[in-house]
Image (cartoon, rainbow, N blue to C red; front, side, top):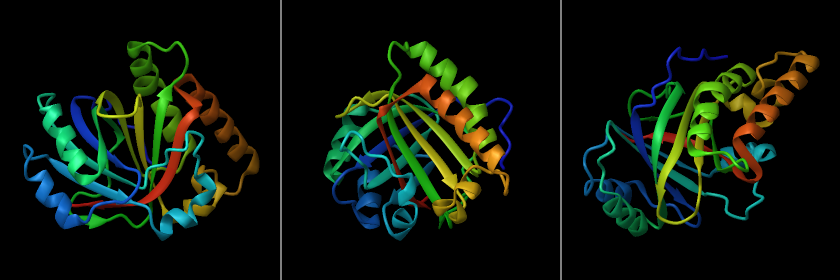
Length: 228
């Protein structure tokens, strides 16, 4: 199980582009991103055989399940969102400008493909949750529970500030070992202890429901690449 950073970084920003039909090729992505200010990191994920193996985790109550995700990281909040939205549209995707936190740093430090899966969760907030309360509970309280109850080796939170299309409030990116794709015990970091596993599931579910509306939250596993 990964350890939680004592002070999660919440001073980066991420442009998350979601794809719902086809995903663009790497060359097309590189050409489009060249029109934006240089990001500090570029990650691209898409559905493939790993998604099929991890299908037990898929949730699609809204009927809008992403087929791919592009994430560009920036140090400040000065990206031209109109330009970003136009770029996303040219790639066939939807743009979401987000305040980012990284309770567990991304394990890919250079261009490569992650051997496990990226669990992508796109959600709307729980009813009557204010902007400040959402950020407080999600970043400062729920993050601890998510790390303690799961075998995630990468965990990034994206609080949506502006969107070109759908009204999402948050986008969660969690990286898991490939063994967790089709194993409850490997996913919930409990070893072979069923009682501990059920406790982890209960804790995570109760904490999640403080943050998000489960009936307005999609979950899909993808294969993650770092492009830059």
